[in-house]
Length: 303
Ligand code: SIN
Image (tube, rainbow, N blue to C red):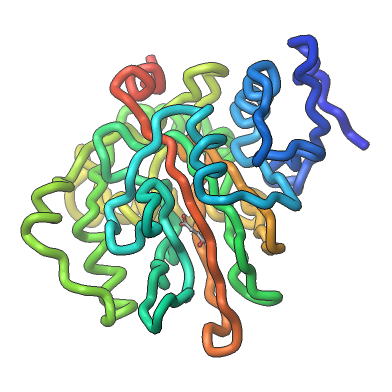
């Protein structure tokens, strides 16, 4: 069993940590997220997340309020843009999947089928997301994660210098139109929602505020163009960088079991959902989203 030494920094904060794959991810064994967790252990979880970008906790049983309570230990929670899929009675939980109640879909059936980083369309994007597998199909529906630190570090030095000077436009409305193109059952975007989420600009490289490690911060879901390179040159660079970031050696595919909780850092990883046989299986996932802030965003700026 691998127990990483860094978690022993604070007395009483030792976590049992095991690598999930050669690309990224760490499993945290033996922590029950439904019970009160002491602050030194929460601090150790934060440190593990800073190092690894993705944490797995297996065998959890989380009622909605317990999920909200443990998620809150890592920051202020944020409601998602897709209000129609908030859990009844607990709007901080975003229901994902083909689940129905009283003959009505209550989960977002087609979220995240493009590589993305949660809420990169906001001026201060979400820092973390915690996804709980309530009911998971026995096949399909893996969630893929790409290590954006490793993707940045693998770029040739001149390319690292170039991308360090560039900014991308991130667009909720273009993402949504692409989603509707793939799933025409989704309602059209109202003017009101379009106005709520205007396009935003982010640098192509951000750093972890604690470790200073740099990550490539682009994703094909929301990043639509490069500000300093209009036209095909920028479009090609963006596409090449996104392709580079999803090379096999940077990607981990999580095959869900009921009770799995994944907690990821949206600066460190991009992620993407995959399909499953929705005529045969029900999938129900509950996500909470830890909000960013102006201060966290400023601390992630390089230079
Ligand atoms: C997400 O994009 O937050 C969800 C991914 C998934 O459903 O696998």
